[in-house]
Image (cartoon, rainbow, N blue to C red; front, side, top):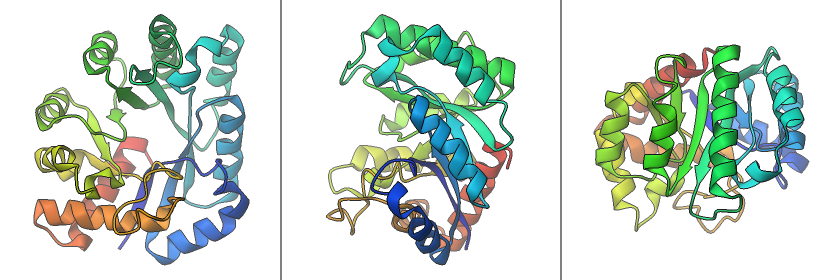
Length: 256
């Protein structure tokens, strides 16, 4: 069995301090690939450094919407330059977070657009963060459909109807350990609605450990097997079949 963690933050503590152990435990469980995602200037540099250290590890680069109002034109120029790196496989995460609104909404929308413009120039796929902002996210994305070949909604927790809408428009969807939570029936319905060929699985570690390991404060890629098992259960297929199809979709999306 082979799995790829489509969205991890291995440059965050406490994972960074034990990254060799994190990778070893992950490989032993069959999770042999990782896209480690930056959310700010330092984290982006760390993602590139980690991707260079480990076979099977790649980097996504972006500025999280939480920090949008502090992102400068120079920061975006730096991002465009860093995106040329050999193991950079995506722009993001980027998008809109109207749940916390740590940055003002106009700033979030402007920086989101700038990320998408960089993705067009760099010919890279995009990792999208969208929380309580589905309609606003789609309003921006419609200007880039056809210009960006592949885009994924990461940590998806919207409705099955919204998932179907995205699949019809050519997007990919990535699920976290949230789908294993007792109160996440809506997320499981979304899993049921998305074909495995357009689905990815992720940890979003160090956050959101899946059941039955939810009490483990720090999530890490080794635990993603529990999420993959839940996807297989929902889809009515074996873990091996689900893993093969999830991995194929992830490789296709990121071009790895």
